[in-house]
Amino acid sequence: MQLPDEAIVYHLPGLLVPAVEEWTPAAEMRAKHFLQPHKIKDLAARLMQVRSHIATERDVKNPPPEMAPIDAGFIDYPQRTLDQFRRQPEAGVLGRVMALAARLREQVDRVVILGIGGSYLGARTLFDALKSPYHNELPAKDRHGTPRIYFEGNNADNDALHDLFELLQLTCVDPELRDERWGVVVISKSGGTIETAAAYRAVRREFAEYYGSNSPLLTQLVVPITGATGKLRDLCLADKFRDEDILTIPDDVGGRYSVLTAVGLLPAAIMGLDVRALLLGATAMTRRFFDEPFERNPVLLFAAANYLMFSECAKPIRVLSIWSKKLEALGLWYDQLLAESLGKHCTGPTPLTAVQTRDLHSRGQQHQEGMRDKFINNLVVKAPKNPPIMIGMSDKNQDDLNQFNRKGLPDVMAAALKGTNQAYYEAARPTADIVLPTLSEHTMGQLLQMLMLATVVEGRLLGINPYGQPGVEAYKRLMKAALKG
Image (cartoon, rainbow, N blue to C red; front, side, top):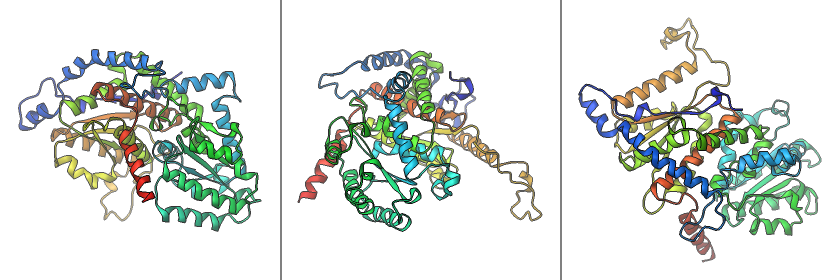
């Protein structure tokens, strides 16, 4: 059961025109660039229709060509996975994920995760949000059996992959020792994405050189996650992988919506995260989406605000302003989700991620005084995980900080958020706040599901199919043609 203080909320006041405000030049600008409150309310009935439409889409198996694709399987997948785990704790997807993760955790000290786009951004998000940024540098005993994690196969950068191989060659000398073994998770739904496929070929070669070309470890320490059919599955079967050691991405879940399938769950389990809490958070958000009224529904409120800012207020650039360094990868994940889902037919918002307070010293100037083409969603973590680091007193006060000696870094962050929002309000720059009570598996499950659901809602409001990515397929086709030339 979700407790009230575990729930994500979305606050709108920073984008609404005040009901009563004395005329000033700033008030006139707010009337022009902020939303009239009735606009949000007027959209409610249409949002209810969209929600009902999305509910029925979950049962569409063979959509007509003009509606295809419909990859709505992600909506119910967390609940189905948990239900299956309760009925078949070992045979279901979650049981297999946990068993394969346990195998890698027991046998290796390093895991290389290969994937690009939705095949790695979700896992990277969870790693950065919920593990120490210095995880890989910690001694083994302080990692509590969790391997070091490396992400590759997300680019065609020769030197980056070479540097990883050099690290492995220097630190892994004896394959008989668990602390000098490394494993691989390779993720590609089709197996045809050339960046990941080329990296995996090179990794397989490196793997065979280290463990021996006939070693059973070549299949025991590699876990493929792929579609029910495709080039990666064919390759793994040719390499004599057992069917039960290959995890399957459902046909009705697109890559950028797959973070709560094995694509994100296996890396999360390897990292030692509570994958059931992730799924419980996602199911809680799905229930809120379908059951809660509009005024308390974070999915519908978020979709409504962003849709109206784009379509009625001419704010095509959508800034996710993240008030936690640990969520920067979440911003990159959302960039892909929004850009690939809604960037079609010469329309759709352009996502931009900023990390605060760092980027107040770069993009902050433009957001305050640049073109009025931006809408800012603040992503705020209410409570830090660790005790506050205090400013304290010093006998050398040349930095003039003794006046703040009773304040800590969380106070500095809160003051920066308050001051920034006030400055934007006075300059008629609209903002809204997504507030997470804390960073945990449960809240991350909520947040990921909220953003995926809201993207689908906004796509339906815009008349854009939020599934499929025909533009990406064009670059893949032309890249392969260029390679052949």
